[in-house]
Length: 463
Image (cartoon, rainbow, N blue to C red; front, side, top):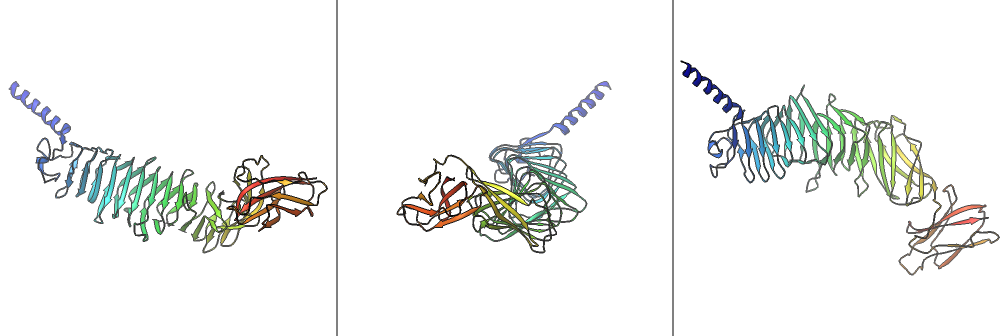
């Protein structure tokens, strides 16, 4: 009797260990049949169940097709691709190693575990895809390619981590089902990319979004961030940028940066519906030429607060104006600073009046403060004499040989307040002059330009 009892206990222990510690390693033993549900493809000649720890070594291409799949933990190694076209339920960690691909085309991905994506998580095909009760830690690339809509259920948290990317080259969307709890935290880059043929595209984001880094919408593309019960928070570290459109009907709060255009080119960013810019948010504007500046077009009635940061790619003239924001239905309130400044070159500072109109925000150059420094590093020789000016009524200045590459020279004269008091253009002699006229005692700065581009700066003292 004791022997029978001992055998029974040992049998229970063996069964317990079998149930809770079974591992399955993919061998691909079935040859051309790469179906997950084929026992011949696994080292133990059985199909993984909900308690299995699954390992798919490098270089294999298993597929979940005809039957649902189950696992506890899953690890797919480098150069492996796992294709999902049916339901997959897992309860532990699912690790996608570097250079591995998780390709999700159809089915329900669920189970309460966490996906650690260190390779590529590819959403592909327009067939129905659902995700429920999982966390996603993206450490590399999520690629949404010709995907359609992905439905999210229960509680889902997606963390797009530092230096990681979510690249969207598709129409469709990420949609939270009613009464579920889905959050996207973006610490990396979330970008809606233009289609290769240049056509427009729209991607829905119906979930809570906390943006801690970069959200970029490409030309002719739209992020539709929808539903009044959802929250879209652009934090102090967040940047909304691009030349497409953010269409917002969710609850939008902005403490970060709005940056139209791109790093290399100025452009226009559209913002639609629930768009209010609030402190301490910053509107970042590049000005690269007389008619080349970033701009935000708002289709709504915004309240505007925060700050404006200007980056100059050229030196504008006093009185030049730049429209940096328009609002199609009128501006409800404007509480930007009345003046902002921007450096240009190593020494000059430009001051802009911020003009709030009914439907636009305009920057107007009010003062140019020219730096007092050594000008020996100028690309051309440029000097003035006599200097200081005492009794002479005629002031002479040098200029480059007009037979050189400089064919449209001009000289602007500024006082210490940055106010332009004289402009001399289209001269042709190597040495030129102008009348002292009403120059009162003080320091003046002369800017030599060719086609509006600054070549050299010098100063003169009038006694």
